[in-house]
Image (cartoon, rainbow, N blue to C red; front, side):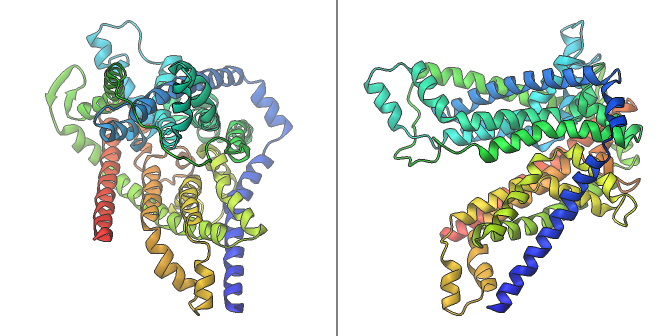
Length: 529
């Protein structure tokens, strides 16, 4: 018993030191760089107020559009009887497999000054500016909103709707009086999550913003281009505000209408009109999602997009000659290390929080989800300030560490929720039979949660491949991740090379998702057999 307690104590101390040293102290060090002079310099700069206004207006506009589109898509898939729901659902989340800057790059390929549709339709204006940022941000954030809203619609009870139908309540009233109140908490959480995601991203506005500068781009310019960490810290603190609000809303807002007993889930009704409209909407939405991705895929194999459409492989050769193959190997190394170490750490933390009770464990749970409130761009700057001069600075390990913590909260919650559903007496029974906790974990718990472990690994890997926010601050002169080459090539007007890099990341992530899906399916068949 003493050995078990000492083991627990060591794990507690290690987890605490890890989060204090790798999350809390870096953020504090960034906030400590804020001075009255720095605040005054930022606030009175010519760029600050326009950047603040642009961030708010583009963020709010894109958030509303993204939620409306996601709500309609979720309704089509969960409340109508259209076929191919799995295919549509897969297409709707494909944008999660490429960096945000690639979405903007796809828009440039279609609607830029020399874009395919710009020339084809003889458009007078290009995509750059306010609506370019909004369009790119909607593409980037739509999958998150769709997943949140479709997930909650799957578990709604049908009994209130049956009672309302018997009472003669119209379908519109059923939607406003039953559906919307039921989804209130999720809608609020989705709003703040999407808004934060958009406002703290600089990939889209950097690519298609034109003269419209945002706070995230301003922070990038101050901290990376001008190495002005004091001004960057002031802007970073501002970007923390919506993230912290989103975090508090998600944590403190209780699950009122969504946690009750579901006697019978809502089943889609046979209605020809709604089915036809759903087919049309989902098809058009899928085209809108795929068009920018297909545009940069085509660009790779055309001599000069869109002027000369002759097939060529020269762009691939030129990009590889510029080091794309080395950069890709760097990204794979970062992603694999972050996925492996992140999955192990997230499992340990979630096990301690879910299976070992006590006030300290609640603290571990809270600090484990705190990373959800730290935007990547803020985490990157805080790491530059805190770790500067340490042996880890400008090495592969600081990038792996940043990716691990940046994406830690979601995999942690996946495992935490899974472990909460397991029999709470497993360890107690094992102890009474003389079986150690380690053996219970190895022989009982790990086999039961293996699919969740796989999902955690994939989440870490995919997001580490596509992120550019934190790593743009931290990437050493060599080896750099491949995602950073997109902006580098675009700035040099090597559009085809930038397209090839985007395609590389997309293909790698698709291959990983398919491979993992096949492994899971095979494992499920074996377990049933």
